[in-house]
Image (cartoon, rainbow, N blue to C red; front, side, top):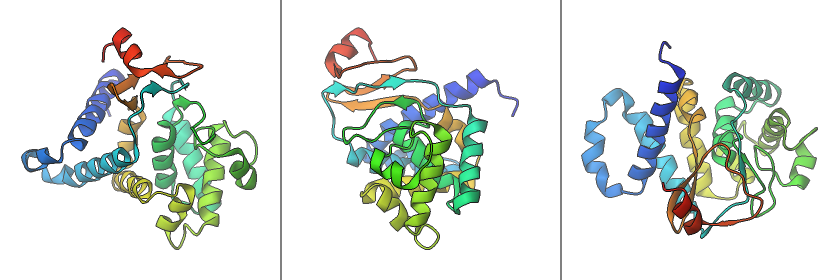
Length: 230
């Protein structure tokens, strides 16, 4: 608790970079896993598994997306929205946080998906219209809509099925479940996730999109990296 915020942020970003690197190299597991303290091994395994599931879904792109990267809402504000949605819908807060993390890095990514999904929980407008009220781009409204959608798809009895209805990918569901399990075991892990950066997997490698990045049209990845060494 006494660690300065800038030190926590730097540690979280090192953590993220390490998980991304290790996730790409299963052949390192036999060397790395024995070095992890036993009390942390479960967290390590879940984060690596989530990373590998998400990586399996991602096709390297040759352009960076037309996104704007903003600071996410304050962590206490987000946690309040997750718990409010949990109380209203019965959907566990940690699942809502895991989806928010995967979809837009807790709201840092502002931009539509290739399928036209919008807002911090990446809803298609017609889906948001079916479950949500208010503004698809507002964190509270989007998180509440996600809770209502997951509840309507049977989260109470089968979380896997409910999350699959949110995104029809087994890899996506497994990643959500792994991050949600980390948060259930240690809610303070949210502080690490909160400080993670936005990366884009491209043909020029992993590209960091810092807060302040803004593009109104796709940007060639190699061109961006040439001007912004990674």
